Length: 197
Image (cartoon, rainbow, N blue to C red; front, side, top):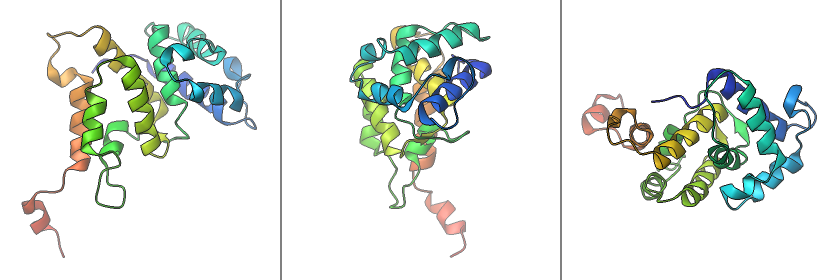
């Protein structure tokens, strides 16, 4: 799967997200001026286009342009920023799709299979924006901010520029489905029989 953000760019996204969370521990550099108010503005955006009008997005875009890594389209970054504003806890290594399929204490996945399929089959960016924000909320706002940003940019790229020649194994939807179902599906009868009672 293609990296849409380099490691330094993902680290910048996490710093930007931290700036939206902590007023006591201000990050240095381009995100020092961010506040809870910026986060509240992002969370109120009903559409990715609304995010385009916010200074917090443009601070992130400028920082990413200066970092070593690929260019990021502003409209795609707006979608990602609006979704990331719903994350409340950055947990490095916590994969978004796997977490959606993981059991939530009731032997059911955090996100039902039907909702997951709706997320996977969104027909436009606005629907995906809403579904992805709901998914973050279902996870209690916990995920890896940098990885999710990369996945969201990947989704936008695959939506805007579908490539039928791209092998399925390199597509985000297949990776998400694999991770979700690895976590969501019950163990087979053979695996259950091998476990001690």
